[in-house]
Length: 317
Image (cartoon, rainbow, N blue to C red; front, side, top):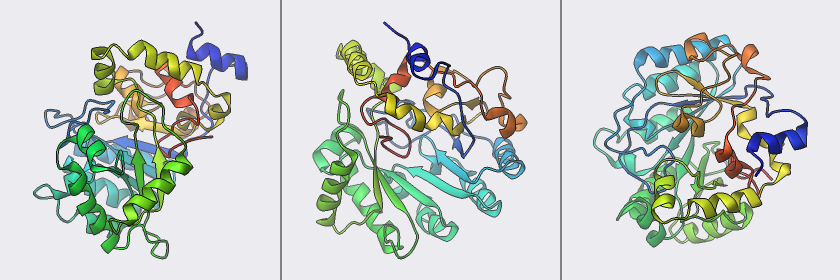
């Protein structure tokens, strides 16, 4: 059975390599107010890994020294990091576009009430996880009552101008399949989301469709249900060479909460840092040395190349 690297060599005659550094993705910690069943990081209330202010400043220093125009902030729930506003304001002052990936419900937690307005004032692009358009499916994955809480926060974003084309305030949603299956058509799912959420009075810009990565809590689920082997067989079978050019790891460097550098957020789980020929900590970041690097791949990467492909911006093909 061919490894992922071997499949890439068949196509490119070489290992997978980065092309440029268009996005600096920053994971500010694994603490979260929820414990979603599909979470590849096993984030949750029991996690205490949070990016320190010193590392935040190192991230901002790297952003200022290098020509990177987008910072993509993720977690856990990014809002639980006490230095998130410092990171966002610093990145915006440096002229970078800022994306924040939120689970929505965290904005109803005590002390989080002003984040939506802060995002608006900073011109932050919001990417909100809403793994389905029905309450039953969302609550099954994320806990009872999550769907209604999510709708409450989405309406608040809409009231602030998010999701309205004329405001420039971008609100994108994220769909994950409810189990060990590959997602359907992003176009068809976006149309269905738009139709269903319109009945709730909710607008959004785009839907990103992401396959579930067989890591963390989702991997544990697959093992418990004896579905890991069949799931990985299905994603291998669905390998699509047309997705390779658009893989996110070819344009991104991922920063873990402790400043260690990775090719993607998924590699953080397996502690597969960037190639040893490159700087491995954000304090030493150099975009020129990172561009063209070998991407450190493993067999979990088959998920990203299955079907229409998966990136943090949704389907590739």
